[in-house]
Length: 105
Image (tube, rainbow, N blue to C red; front, side):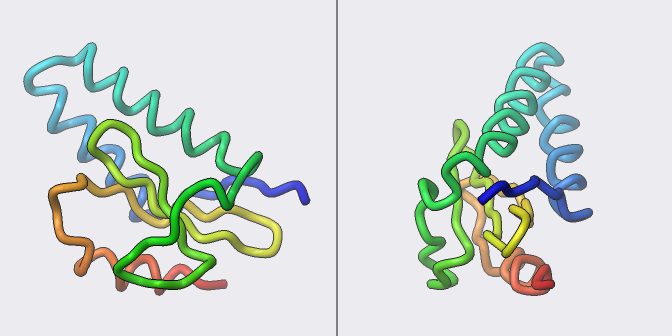
């Protein structure tokens, strides 16, 4: 099945916030991290089930891939991969769960 990648508004905001935060110390590193996150997200459709199920959610359709210390959390849907959120691994996922679960449809 051919999936397409769709970014939720929350995930786009997450990427912008990550870039802004890292950019304070290193504009080069900020660009490298964001590029790696985007590149990883763009290849998810090739093997969507390669990412592990998100333990906090325990739903087979919600998975995650790791890039550096960031979690790319996505939902496998019928025709698309929805990138729901991107969070730092040290942060609690609880506030983002509402956004992830709210992305159905």
